[in-house]
Length: 323
Image: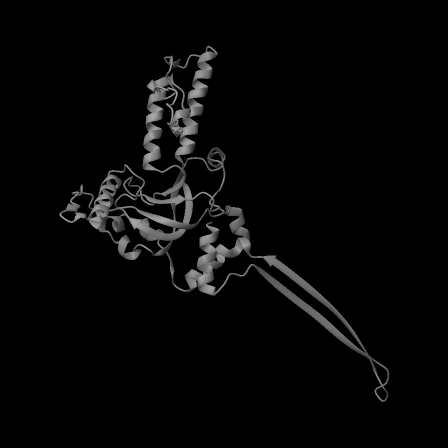
């Protein structure tokens, strides 16, 4: 859950966010002592019960219910699972950018940081087995002096220059693995991964079988979205598709027109800033249409997430009990 975003929206709906709920109940009994004809003595016996509960973890269900009651949150799970809606472009009319939606679909987590660490582990284990005399068809690559892990020359930085920051792929050792897999190929894959999906945790929903359809959301670090180390996160949830529910605001749809723009931004009066910005954005749309940068790709769209969760499944026995 994005706690800050959830609190802000709930505050706009209700004029504030309740932090706790208190419930107090009391009982009182009165007794009179003595005959009615003379002065009576009054005795009072009472009991009070006080209950307090924190609403910190309940604010998202409160927001979800409030948005639904106001008709602002729409569940479009059935619509995104219909291939005809994607083919006709109907989804952009049902849920235009800015719409608040809930989507339940099969999806998976992706993080290029974890992919890099997994590939680095694969290389390390392969070389370790080779060093122990276990033949997997793998051989260690001999790195020439002065060469680094990525095969690039590693020279001491000149005065006034700093060493380039290490990249995710730099942790992958040079090796020749089984099936022709080697360090160069794995590093190339990670270079692509950190360009196509910016490093960080992503959730990718695939509601239809077509591989051309993707609903993506970037789960910003520090917003309590499954916050954990990448290796721990994937050890818990794995890489296989599971049913996830994503609640948030539709960000943008992938551009259908991704033609390469003309950079006509300079005239007699100088640089036309608006045209220059439009040209840069058009170039990014072109790259996004090719899948080269972290932008939604037609016909998919992005979601600005409020929360991501999984339903708790019930077994057949549990259902029988509740029914």
